[in-house]
Image 1: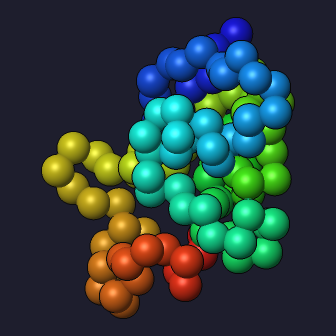
Image 2: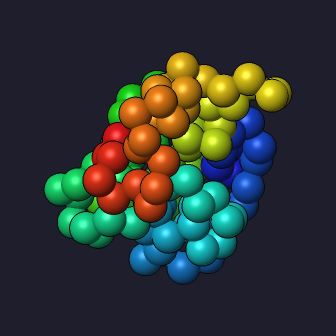
Length: 102
């Protein structure tokens, strides 16, 4: 089964050692999910998987075969920003993302 990210279907990586975070950033170009500490402490890699918040740096992409994942990019509705995105801008939380974890 493929993995669904922000409403689009993708094949999982062949290498079972690829983290969900690296798959999102390096394979698919979703740069909104940040690599902060890479140890699950900072929350910069937070995504929503099947409606549950989780840390993408601590998960292997292959674990989410058939799952639906939403990243910060997936919150946009056309031209309108999601309230979370608007608040990040309003409170100057839109730099690298390390100090504004999920």
